[in-house]
Each structure stands twice: as C-alpha cells, then as structure tokens.
Image 1 (tube, helix red, strand yellow):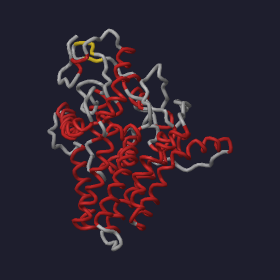
Image 2 (cartoon, one colour):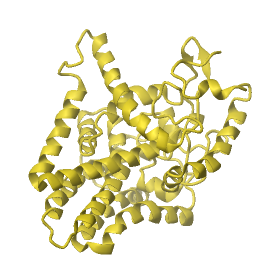
Image 3 (cartoon, one colour):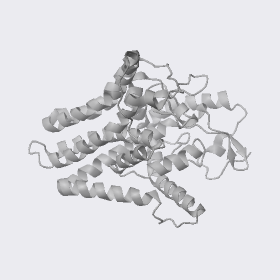
Length: 383
C-alpha cells in the first residue's frame, strides 16, 4: 500500500537531507520535455547527463561508506518509498505524452525523434527498470503491480520472473543466465542473455505451476499478464502516434533493455560460488557480487551498487542496504556509469576487470586451481 502522509518532526529534518539526493532522478522528467520542445543540440542532453554528469559527480564527491539502520521501520522509510511509487505515473505520462507529441512536432526531424527516444530509453532503462527492480522485491501487491507496469513499458516483463525465481537462486553459478562468465565479452553475453533469460523465466513459472498440478497456460501464470500489458502498451503507442509512434516506443524499449543487461553484465562478472558436490553450491555471500560505493551514482540508482548486500539480504529496501568494504566484497574501481561504458569495449573491460577477478579467486578460493570447469558450464563442475 502507498504509505500515508505524516507530519515530519523537527528531529527528522536531518534525515530528509539524506533522502533528497535520491530524488535527483525526477529532474530527468522536465529535462526530457525540454529536449523534446527544443530539439536540435538539446536532445543530446539525456544520455550526456545520465552517463557523463553522474560519472563526473562520482569523481568529485567520492565514496559514501555510511550505512543506514537495517532495522528501520517502514514508517521511517516513507520519503524513500515515494521515490519509486511516484516515478511510475510520471514515466507513463512522459513516455506516452512524447509518443503523441513528437510524431506531430513539425520542428523535429526524423533523426531528432530517433535520438530523443534513444535518450528516453537510457532513462527508462537506467531509472525505470531499476525502480521496477526495487518494487518487485516488495511483498505488497501494489508495488509488484507497479513493477510490472514499468517493465511492460519496455517490453521486458519476464525480467521479474527471471530475476526472482532464477537469478537470485542461482546467482554466481553456471545455472544463472545473467551471471557473466570470466572472459565473456558483453557482445557475446548480450544475445545469449536475451534468448536464455526469456526461456529460463518461462520454464521457472511453468515448473511452479506444474508442482501445483496446473498447466503453463493457467490464468495464474504471470506471463499472461506480462503479454497482456505489453500488447496494451504497444496498442496505446500505435493509437497515439501511429506506426511511427510504435516504432519510437519500441526503440526506447530496446535501449532500456540494453541498459539493463549492461548492468547485469558488470554486477557479477567472473564471480562464482564454490561447488560443494551433489548439485549444491555454497550459500550466497557478499563476495559474490561486485560492490561500488560511489556516492552520486548510488543516488541515481537508489543504492543498486550496494549489490553485495542486495543479494545477501534481498528483502532490504534500498535506503538500508549496507556497504561492504574490500575485506568482505570485491570492489569496482568506478561507478556503474563508467563501468557500463567500459563494458562496451571488451579489450578495455578485460584489462580493467580480469586482474581483479584473478585476485578475487586467489583471496577467497586459493584451494581451487582449475577454474575452467566453471566456464560456460551447463552442468555442475566436478568436485
């Protein structure tokens, strides 16, 4: 349920100062409309701000190593929760409003419309899918429905099933589609994940239904809802903007998916849980995710870069995710905006990350000498 408004005591004013930076993403909404209304050079602002401005802010502001109280009550997190709840209608209005507006705007050339929706896809992927990730992990139905709406706006609804039923269960093992293998470049990872994640998500939901004695097409299969929402949003884009509008809508969805999978690629690259035999792996630990404590990009991504704690304690809301130091979790040298750009250049990526993966192996698993058994395996490696 949406939390009820309440009076903020004076003792909480300091706490609000910690909340406000997480609202920075909302400045991207008026910026998007400014770009559409202005056209020309202004359209380049969307990716520039999202990728480069926050990279510069990371360099200027450094790291944030402070931790919130993991025992905080839901009422204490009111202003944090509103960030993700309010974003959903704002993204909906902006996305479909611009489908309607840009297909009729005489001052925008076709190339400008395309580049504008490329920038919108950067936002719906960087912010929208990330906020859906926070919402899908919550227990109440409203937040999960909001997550579904955000994912349907980018034609990637199955991400919820894949993430909750497959990724969190099998992360850092060969059974997890979206754990990037050591030496696997992004351009090989991306097409593999696009295909395998859809299949693994569908199979996971079908298996759950089968255990209840139900067929895959039973009405409780969320894929029916996923397909319905996606078809509905595609039809709305077609109604508002014709075939051009549908094409622009599909373009931003494709860019958003690319942004998501770039993040998936860097979060667990080369990390593998130890195989214990009999089909079992060790429990997930903070050391099985790459951590980044960079202040500004964590504001933009609502602490997604504290990924070690997210996998260790998936039930924690983003304000109370804990930071782990280098003695407990592997650290990325830069925040996600820089690292995702590096991932697009595989030789550069390997130069940055492969030595760190090898150092991680020596630190945590000195007894394992043959890591080839963990590479692109479809079955558990030998003991």
